[in-house]
Length: 372
Image (cartoon, rainbow, N blue to C red):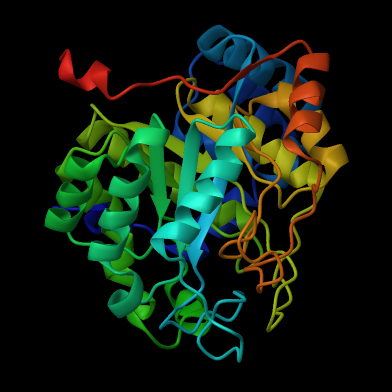
């Protein structure tokens, strides 16, 4: 039993047609409800909900403050390697791109860590390409053990792994795993992932199930907006979230909102997602779920990130480098994608505080698990 059983009961075209046929009256009816369900969520992400964006935003703000208070957690990604065995049409690390590959050594990792700690971070996201021989489980485990003493929270965004491999990494100090389906449209997924382990749609789809069974503290999911219709992909993400929450109820969950950004080997978005579309989606997720963490990366512009703080976001990255060694070791190496908000950590911190929010550097400690 896995999410695939639920997934197989859905029909992409039927869902798309349903989402686009909601009326303003349907949306008004939904917004009168105290509790929003998955069927209601379809209405909130429909074109018919556009005139109600202000009402959705106010409700999203109130629900977020109720659950998370006036706090925003800050985290930073650290890219360990750009080596990859997959072909992904939208990624600068794709094996078809003739770039210089780099994997950080122990001394280089520690040099990056020293720089990041100097900025004040205690939550770190480790990122690699998907290359099992060079940056497989043994490399990732060693990296976690190497930096474990420096951070209270270590998250990874790497290739999908088996359950026993996740359990091994959890024992080494892993806190959370981000694994994005990219798109839930199987045919489109295959078009953008023609070769490599990542081309196996079902294995990637079942990854959060393996994580849940491993006992991971937090799972992050999401879709890459631009590959397919964002509304349908977002419903599948919400469906996935609700399945996971019901099945692995001890685990925390987060959702991210990556939009396609310029990169080496550029591919143009199939469907445009405007800023107002993204605001609508963030508010819809918050109305659906008060507890889920909503994260915003530096892919987005300064202006957008300034304005999204009060609309449901609970965590935000800053000063991100999407190339291995980008902070201190090799600033000139190829980025996975271009970032948009290039402000430094202090500037982001001040922006958050100016809006009346408190910056959170640490909100969890491994000793909490030992007390259970």
